[in-house]
Each structure stands twice: as structure tokens, then as C-alpha cells.
Length: 249
Ligand code: PGA
Image (tube, rainbow, N blue to C red; front, side, top):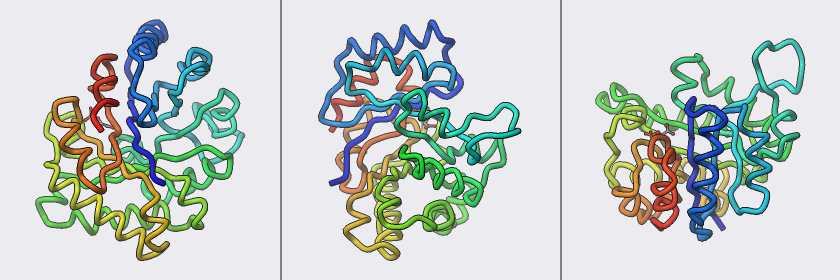
């Protein structure tokens, strides 16, 4: 059965002391356990966060990884390294990585495979730009991102993936896709997966919405039948609002 998930993507925010302070507030806020809560802080926080989270139900995610296990890749972090500090999930293909670091769905597909091979779970992001939506190309864009990024996996591997639909025009802009727009795309993603892997597999994959989700709009989005939760940036940097998001199902 697919899971309800609230994942907080902290991006490049908060130094270690500030990060620990927020994490402790989130732990003390007693997040709702009806959904899976995930925190994705910067790499340097992961090790100490795992210890702080050890007696909680909150899972830990990295925001990226390298596709090789080790070697001469200055500045990179491998999945084995993430695994060694107890990371559970890895966000891959976020639009900021695609835009600023020139990642594309094919290169991300290698990371997806490596994450799964090591027993961690990818949160695979897809999303169209404003120009693509205005030109009516949003379905083509998302279909290509889903197929290129995920369709090299077998059924069991795919079932370990979480998908996040994040329209680029809604990220950090305060502009949210309407529940109708989001549901329409989530349903399209599920159908695209069903065509290749069958309905049972598609029905069992959590598809999160991301893009200016906050407690005020979360309920409306999360009641849509194909929206299984959120990947949240700004609103996840506040303990009360993170807790409220977990209460939004
Ligand atoms: P936002 O970011 O909630 O601040 O729009 C979402 C994301 O980038 O994952």
C-alpha cells in the first residue's frame, strides 16, 4: 500500500547549530505518525541528525548523491557513505540540480539505480518549467522525465521509489499549482507508470506534490486522490508548520 509522506527539503539552509535547534523543535512537536515524516538537511548535518532521530519515527534523507561508490570525484558524496551514517532516502533530480548543476534525467537515472542497489529509497523529482506549461508541453516533459529517470528499473526496484511532481514555476515562488492542476499531473504520472508496469505497481507508488506547499493549502492538495503528500521547502523550515503539514491528511 502506498504511503502518505511529508518530506522537508532544507536545501542549503541552516548551519549545524541552527539545524540541530530546528530538528529538536520538530522532534518535540510530536509530528503526526499517520504519515511518514522525512527530513532532508544538508550533508554535514546527516551524521549527528541520525543520532538525534534514533528514538523517533522521523526518517532521514540526503538531497543528492554521486552515482559511483568511490573514487576521484572531488567534492562528491557516495550512496555508501550516506548509508554508513544511516540515511534512508535520497532526493534526486530536484529542479535546482537540473537547472544549476546541469543534471538530466539520464544522468539522474544512474543515481536512482545506485541508491536502490544500496537499499536506500530515491525520491525522484520531475517538473515542467513555466514556458513548457504555457506552450502546452507539460505532459510531454513529465512523461520524458519519468521514462528516462525510472523506466530502467524492474518492478521491485520501482516499488522502492517515491516520485515528487514539482512544477518549477511553483517552487519557492509562493505560487502553487491548483489542486486540479496537481491532481491532473499526478494522475498522468500514475497512468504513465501503469502503462509500463501495470496498475498494481502504479497504485503502490507514492507521488508527492512540491511547490509552495504550506499548512494553509496542504489539506486541499492532499485530499486529491493521486496526491500522497508533499516535498516541502520553505514551510519545512519551521517546526510548527512542519508539524501542521503532517496533520494535513
Ligand atoms: P518550496 O520548495 O516548498 O519552498 O516551494 C519545494 C522544493 O523545492 O522541494
